[in-house]
Amino acid sequence: MNIVLLSGGSGKRLWPLSNDIRSKQFIKIFKSEDGTYESMVQRVYRQIKKADADANITIATSKTQVSTIHNQLGDQVGISVEPCRRDTFPAIALAAAYLADVRGIDPKEPVVICPVDPYVEDEYFASLKALSLQAKKGEANLVLMGIEPTYPSEKYGYIIPRNSGNISPVDTFKEKPDVTTAKDYISRGALWNGGVFAFRLNYLLKKAHELMDFTDYEDLYAKYHTLTKISFDYAVVEKEKSIQVMRFAGQWKDLGTWNTLTEAMEEHVIGKGILNDTCRGVHIINEMDVPVLAMGLHDVIISASPEGILVSDKEQSSYIKPYVDGIEQQIMFAEKSWGSFRVIDVENGSMTIKVTLNAGHCMNYHSHRNRDEVWVVVSGNGQTIVDGMKQSVKSGDVITMTAGCRHTVIAETELKLIEVQLGSEISVHDKQKYQLEY
Image 1 (cartoon, one colour):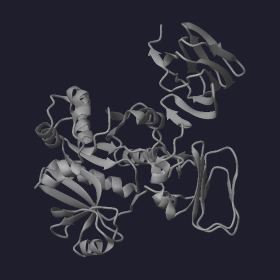
Image 2 (spheres, one colour; image 1 turned 120 degrees about the horizontal axis):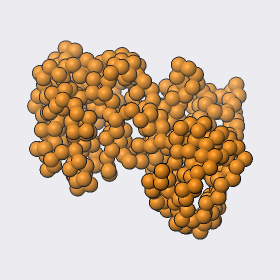
Image 3 (cartoon, one colour; image 1 turned 90 degrees about the vertical axis):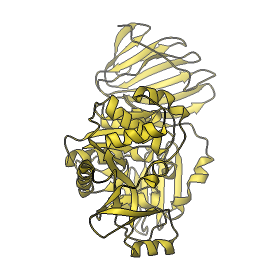
Image 4 (cartoon, one colour; image 1 turned 135 degrees about the vertical axis):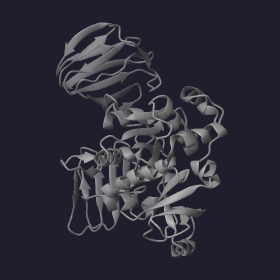
């Protein structure tokens, strides 16, 4: 099975755990079988591999998410990087060209497209496999998954099938309705449109060439910023006459808000948190190393991270986005391909960061024009390279680097260090990368 997971958005509705770099699908909030916590993308990736160990998984995403994806899934997963945001049709077209030209997938092979963040059980991925096999038959150009609705939702578009069979031609599509209209759709056998569909790769490539002027993946990537922003539904689905829908009646949840996310949490407290016995329907998600105490609260979400603190009625939490859009906050935590960092303190002329490097990984070899840096090794063993000079480092060692100095650190074991940045113009953009000198 060839599957493309669409990973976009900043997930601001899950602030303060999500930000412009750390979208909702990367928040580790679900308890896995070994007792550790995993993110939505880790959970979905694991479930796909369980359903099909040989599945070819590609994630279509932005540049800002690549490091986090490598951190959470490793280096084996395919990534189709969007140079900028151009909505779902260009993203899917670029992913299709990536599969054909970079991964060498046979154009006659089926491809399944689905969001990266559904909360589903294993039966969903068995249905994705069936969706792929149905697309391979070529009875229709597109095969959609239609979710059996559990209530008259205003959040989703609707697919109205021509008959009640498990696989049916599509009669028509309906936009997101009001509750009364949704009830009418459901009475006519309508299904939720969950944004899951399959096609033969050559079908999508043909559509892409009809609507965009490009030769191959490299050419499309170079021209990507010039493409018109348009969704896959508007560009392709609404114009396609040959469409089937496959019903899915299993569990399916869109965890886009704190309210819906807490419904899927197995525990009421993640991190340091205490609920007294008068609390009802309260959830605490705390990434800070300080305790949170809640008393006498009902149906409240409390979320704390280095980015900020949210205390909200669960129903009201759905309306968080316009308030978060007005918050200007430096990124305080991020996962990188080599590990993670957390900002501890920011003052005029200095910034202090705790850095964790995973064993066997290293930072880019780089320099800064406008700041000096000091590293204090807290734990672990590794090596630093400063202007070409290599030396071993361990807990308690201090390394200083002046502005313009080329430097990196290589972790032999998990390596934790405190980085102090000193300068009048501290900026994430003040970084020049180099190839290692040996």
